Amino acid sequence: MSHPATAPSTPIFPDRDLWLVVGSQDLYGPQVLERVAAQSRLVAAELDGAAAIPVAVTLRAVATSAQAIRELALDANSSERCVGIIVWMHTFSPAKLWIAGLRALQKPLLHLHTQFNVELPWAEIDMDFMNLNQSAHGDREFAHLAARMRLRHKTVVGHWSEPRVQREIGTWARAACGWHEAGRLRIARFGDNMREVAVTEGDKVEAQARLGVSVDGFGVGDLVAAIESVTPDAVERLIEEYERDYDLSPQLAARGSRRPALVDAARIEAGLRAFLRRGSFGGLTDTFEDLHGLPQLPGIAVQRLMADGYGFGAEGDWKAAALVRILKVMSAGLPGGTSFMEDYTYDLSASGPVVLGAHMLEICPSIAAARPSCEVHPLSIGGRDDPVRLVFTAASGPALLLSLVDLGDRFRLVANEVDVIEPPRALPRLPVARALWRPRPDFATAAQAWLEAGGSHHSAFTTSLDANVLVDFADIAGVEIVVIDGTTTARAFRNELRWNETYHRLARA
Image (cartoon, rainbow, N blue to C red; front, side):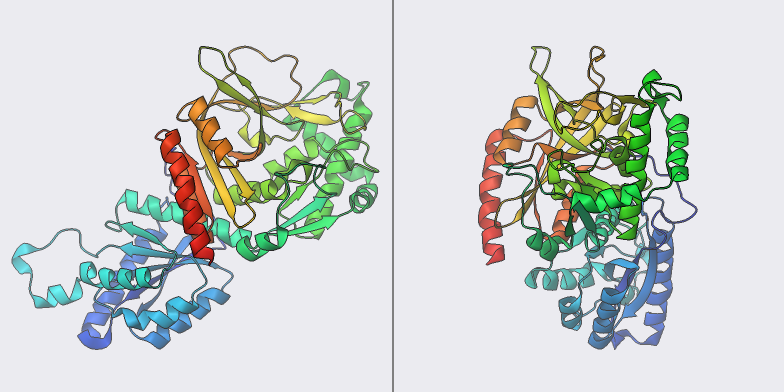
């Protein structure tokens, strides 16, 4: 999945940046270090202006001493702006200088293996040139230490001006921004998870220790109190937005027979927004089995909250809510959208099996192919009034399905690359938003791999990001990831799961 690069006037993440730290040593004298610094500023400026890199890149130092490197690492740890460190050895930088700093560093690390010049000036090369331009030498020294220290880090190889190199750095930068968000993310959980369901359970303490995500439980009565405090003006403003942005069914129009349902839905949305803002929450969960005091299950409210960047998981699935929010952050500024999703049913006809994804209500309109319709329909579970929801079909194109599962001793990310297609026929009686896709490499292989990996029926669905961002995120987080794509075979995937089991058990020990 690729997207055209357009140069932004400001970074997509204006309050985040990457620090470029360039390695050298005092052995070469002040003149060489001045040239190293001058050339490093040019590299930083190029990366800072690259359209593919969504955050600012600033040169922090030409590092020549162990004390300076350690102090810089501590400064990065305490910086709210810094989401990661890029290191590059312009000259030879003895790696023992880096040990204390790398032991202290808590931010994501990228090793850029590059050099200042593109071509060698063959007729002019002398020892002064060799001493100044020895990244091939210095980066190997650094990489050896990183391997010996078992550092989780990303390596990008190539000239700093290459679009491919800048794209790889940009992909990692998005993953680093997702990791930064995870470290401060709070999920509001209204009620518990759906009773007797296994996959929506999980170790919330381990999630906070491993990922930084905090999950806070609230009684539905706390939400009801927020809803009851909503003013009529706030409700009216939301209804005006509904009328502007969606096609209202005749029942929900100003004189329609179900207009009160729209008023209730708007009041729920206003109350939810106030509650989430007040607690600085980035996502939420609810469950149809715990709606005491709510007139209807939140539908359009949750859909619009997701469209504004919040995470959501149904039936108490806080892992899905956290994943949706992290994906929303990582995909900022990219075309497409991200939504909560559920594998619902299959078409297994001979023309090629496909998956119909949907949920009772809560699919994000950011993935819609066209203007959504605002409708009200019965819901056979929950025991409340008919909920209002947005109905649409997802846009065609490549997408990624992701599930974060708790295996008891670790978390695993399961990813499947899919291709979203238009339904072959109309769905006039399906009263929910939906997406239809073909999994890669094919239905049988993808479904078998997903099942054997323990993937949930709930997922995060994105048309904005590809698997590379999630691989970088998993590496930063130290979380297992398995990717089902066009090259997957059942035998190789099963072996990968077995090898991962051994590796992660040894790594935790």
